[in-house]
Image 1 (cartoon, helix red, strand yellow):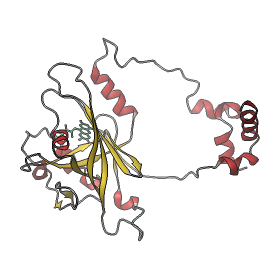
Image 2 (cartoon, rainbow, N blue to C red; image 1 turned 90 degrees about the vertical axis):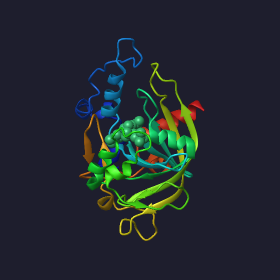
Image 3 (cartoon, helix red, strand yellow; image 1 turned 60 degrees about the horizontal axis):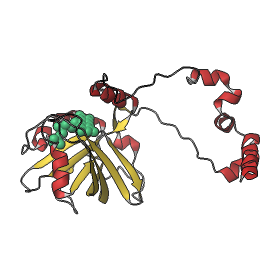
Image 4 (tube, helix red, strand yellow; image 1 turned 45 degrees about the vertical axis):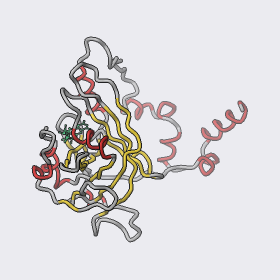
Length: 259
Ligand SMILES: Cc1cc2nc3c(=O)[nH]c(=O)nc-3n(C[C@H](O)[C@H](O)[C@H](O)COP(=O)(O)O)c2cc1C
């Protein structure tokens, strides 16, 4: 049995109390009601963006319903949520006044391009988050290059290592927590095309080189992070490991007895 597997399987509290303490299990936790009357919503925002980190940034390109205006803006309430079919989720926060242009465009046209953000792009990306009036294109603010797409009207960002054309498959809108605020919403997007920068992907177009992608992660507040080291952990299969571990054998025995 490898040392790593021993550590992983035996549970920190059984045999490794020193590790257990270092990982924080001996500390107590504060309970927070996110909806408590005296809790300002901004505290939830700050807690969530600092605690759920890092988050990838989806740099989303859309076109208005009348086809007249192009829009580009970053979103870190964003994630790939499946690969079969390839699906993505984006969250739009409530704000005073009208909904965000990206959300309006997604509702009106049902399509977009999700572009990745590499380290060298962050100034341009941040510039596009300005609250430009509806009708003003952030492409010009960013100075980034446009490339045409195949399955949607919105353009791709040329500088992005990876871009995903996609169509909206579902929208869930919530009630704003105060009058005068726009409705928050989450949008589910299914990919219709992938684009990967030359030199950044293997021959099978199945693996993107992290050194080329150099993804920027959003952290709390206005902090960002870069990935400066990585490590790998193999995933275990129960049937391969059960015979090597007394704990797994015991758990299997108990499970068989109770079923
Ligand atoms: C890195 C970054 C991430 C952001 N993530 C989100 C997000 O997930 N949801 C959101 O509603 N706004 C987010 N914003 C703010 C929007 O980008 C900003 O409101 C922008 O003006 C929206 O543009 P639009 O109205 O053209 O869609 C983020 C801003 C930055 C700089």
